[in-house]
Length: 450
Image 1 (tube, helix red, strand yellow):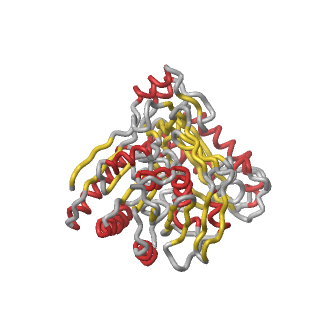
Image 2 (cartoon, helix red, strand yellow):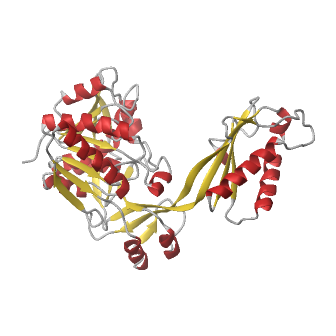
Image 3 (cartoon, helix red, strand yellow):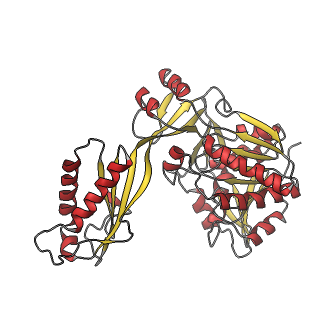
């Protein structure tokens, strides 16, 4: 029987980023039907998918998973984690699952655990490419067989369907690989018979926790879904949902304000309305679900570009600042000639000028009395990267130029040693859509009783 009211508690915008104990307790007192949280994103860049390192510390992940799982078991409701570990690859899912097993042992908890993987083999992707079933998403280039072969880790972004299958199998804790954020949070309402359009739209606003509240924070947010509408309310009594905060977050990370695309579907939000339904609540209506003719999933893949070393320094000399681009390029060219290795890349980021916006920075002139310089060297091995980075920093440190005031050094180094090895460097090499035979094809489900 379809539930008429379905309440979702999302404790935070990203698992491991924290939430208030009081807000969580208040949220649990509202009798939610599920605790669902997102744990990852491509926002932190390609490193976590490439390296397999988790996005957050084990301490943070275990602390918050313990709170969630204990509360879920006490209330008899499922706990769902999407994009486990950060990038949702197998290494991240296994890392998270091991923490869950540890929590179960230490707290003497017993439940059915579901693990859903989202890794895509190069062979499967190559087959799709040969059948013309891959298209560009936001990469800006067409995928080639050579790019597929060079890729390290590749994941696909699942919709709600694999998680619904886990719930149908009786899972009480679900650790999912890479998942579309809103779909992971919407999965339990959809499983319970809710309107997919309203559930996914609600999931979109809930995915960042209380970022849709005032004041915003990584904190608890609840969605209460009923026939024809849903309402949003923060867990903390010190926050409120407003029409402005909720509507603004509904537009978050979307190019089109009226269409929200996801795996196998689009939401038409052109008829949505937002209204204040209480001092701390907002009611949302109007989303429509448009099923795609074919089911496409987003792929995320990375390749290693080499090894990175960085140096962080400050520049205070006005004459060096005035000629900065010219002198940085002079040292870069000299370093490349000195090491004569085609794998070597030298890059600069200038903070206090355009370190954040880059070429999009509208204010071209440097107005501050000091700037920060990050030197980056990427090469085929760490030794070469470190040597080249030190060559650049040393070259700039002792560089003589017309108008030089100081003779004892042009750079002020933040750390000793001045060069810091950052390890393997990665870039997104796959950011494409792939056609699949079914919503669950790429996402195998594993069940175990703890």
